[in-house]
Amino acid sequence: MCCDFNIKEFTKQLQNSCTKIQIKKVEKNNTITTYIKNRNQIYILASGKADLIKYDVNGNKTIIETLNENDIFGEVFFPITSNNELFVVAKENCEVISFTFDDIIKKCNRTCKFHETLKTSLLNLIINKIVTQNIRIELLTKRSIREKLKSYFSSLSNNFSITTFSIPISYTDLADYLSIDRSAMMRELKALQDDNIILRKGNKITLKSKKS
Amino acid sequence: MCCDFNIKEFTKQLQNSCTKIQIKKVEKNNTITTYIKNRNQIYILASGKADLIKYDVNGNKTIIETLNENDIFGEVFFPITSNNELFVVAKENCEVISFTFDDIIKKCNRTCKFHETLKTSLLNLIINKIVTQNIRIELLTKRSIREKLKSYFSSLSNNFSITTFSIPISYTDLADYLSIDRSAMMRELKALQDDNIILRKGNKITLKSKKS
DNA sequence: TAAATTCTGTTGCAATTGCAACAAAAACAA
DNA sequence: TTGTTTTTGTTGCAATTGCAACAGAATTTA
Image (cartoon, rainbow over all chains, first blue to last red):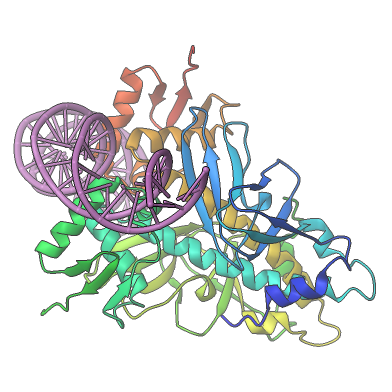
């Protein structure tokens, strides 16, 4: 997928020249937004990292998505109900641009080039999101911790073309991402090493080649 | 999300008037397409039902997605590797329109209104896809069969506003969709009934109101 | 630099889940 | 209608997984 859209450059040029597209800076640990029904706001993370967090009726917290630069998020992507509240919280200082879905489909005025750029880029950004989601779904549908880990490692290794790599997130977060118990995951990591399938040093993993 | 795009009407008008957009009919049990790297083909199901199926290196089959009318699919949404092969198979007679991502971004010719319609509708269709995926991810991240079932029922009941409803797919397919063992699921369904949380008759479920 | 917090690593135990296997019911096809 | 295939329902058993609890390492904050 080719995408020559540079969100940082776009943001810099934009500043306040289009009233329909907002830019805001949010400091670490602050809330970027709360999802509100029918507002149809769309956000793009121009810089920083953030988490989309849910609290269910019992107050349990889940990280629904981890968001990085270029990631798109917002209410339009979620069925919002009264049973859950969705928040996006900055994990680092963030720069965020936002607009409503309806505004961006329409033209702002004849000279506003930002709308057109955004509309075309939006397709690319959204498609990337779907790809990311499909990878996650594939991992989640694996029936055992071992299979989940093997799939995850496989995707990190660009499907086995690289044999040694670092895990880009903490093991605590990885367990959340794969939706498994952390201690059970650590146990399985050791089992994978005992079975000579991987070699692990801290967050560095080496895949052992199989003789089939 | 409002979307006044009528895919059936669009398909009827289109016929063969735009060479960049193809229509084809596929009979039940036949393959609609095989995913091929770098082809970037996009498909929309105008009518019928289909499954996106994967065979892994060991020959195990998984249903990745179930596709219905208005659903969009194609290579752009998947990281295609040599480790797996993806097929879309018609479960009923289907009508499918297809085009490449690049073709649709560009204009075909000055009088071709289909490109513009499609480009705008595409955003809506894709956003709907993301919503569907997010629902699936939410279900899959639930840690127990009971929680998965409760979430699934909750989404079917429009978040508890309806208390009795039918399950639109077979229990066999539901187990696949939730990525759990079917017999374990049946066992848990009985447990939910024993605990007076649901009442089940065939594929009809009634949610019992909780006194909290 | 010290204190506090988060992350990693480990284990026993109990609960959940998957697997295998089978029979009955239902749906589909010839 | 009859035979075939798919789906539903059930159970015992074994394996996997989650939970709780803790200690040490690493990182962050004051």
